[in-house]
Amino acid sequence: MGPELEAFETEFAQYCEVKHCIGVGNGLEALHLLLRAYGIGSGDEVIVPSNTFIATWLAVTECGATPVPVEPNIDTHNIDPALIDSAITPRTRAIIPVHLYGQPADMDPINALAAKHGLIVIEDAAQAHGARYKGRRSGSLGHAAATSFYPGKNLGALGDGGAVLTNDEAIANKIRQLRNYGSTVKYRHEVTGYNSRLDEMQAAFLRAKLPMLDRWNSRRREISVQYAQLLAEADICLPKAPEFAEPAWHLYVIRSKQRDALKAHLERQGVSTVIHYPIPPHRQACYQPLRGCRLPIADVLAEEVLSLPMHSELNIEEIGRITTAVLGFRQSTRRPS
Ligand SMILES: *Cc1c(COP(=O)(O)O)cnc(C)c1O
Image (tube, rainbow, N blue to C red; front, top):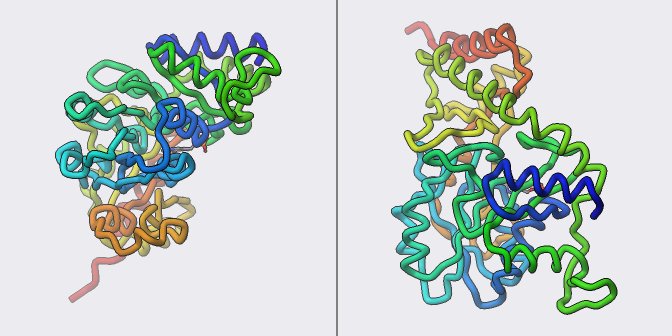
């Protein structure tokens, strides 16, 4: 917790257009510390997307609360604000919208519902560094946000890292205390805290990379436009950004009814793809009591999604090869009658 961290916290807070950035050990801990800072625990319910990386749910169970899944809009892949109201109970304390794949969630209706019911809104912004919603940066759209600097994120460290973002000074101070053994004065421990620090080396790497983030993100945006043009005729469902969104294009996720065959075809053509995510949280062994619950949209997405290569360093020749391989799948499956 030296000068590199302090400088990075100031610079990243400025970038995200919030007052406070507090570096922590990783994204999962950023979410978990936030829930603890808001006093959320046993007996409380927290609304989470059914379609997300498992860390969103793990943070909730880690603090003793219950994750209550809400289905996504099938086109945006993000939590459907229209379905949140009926998931709210007297025990609900918070909503964690996730800007999945770098696409901002529809925050205005979520914030309006939260205000009506007195709930906290914590953004999971781990995939959305630099994304904007109606002109505002992800990380500045709720009461607080958690983000991750895992090396594969748009802004990645050379190891693990994470941060909490907020305009709320009291919450910022609680996070500073919780990340440092529950201490504000050395060797005095007011609460049972954690060791969750963003170390000086990672902060220094992040400071060196932050000035390039907007350039990298705009290259991702260009690639998404090229994919959309070149794949317009492909027999797959392309991601579409809603009008309110300026996505960070962390991933370029398409949908196909023949996803597994398409994935195998692309692999044969030398194009690696990844499934984000093959098993939704409610079907994981660790959430076995929830396995009977019906979340059909999350299930369909797990069967149909496929992430095409997406990175700021992809060049036009590679994009050509990838899109040709995708278009070739349709031809190879068209059988003579
Ligand atoms: C990566 C990620 C996290 C967790 O971040 P870690 O730093 O890996 O702990 C949480 N939520 C989402 C949506 C993520 O993509």
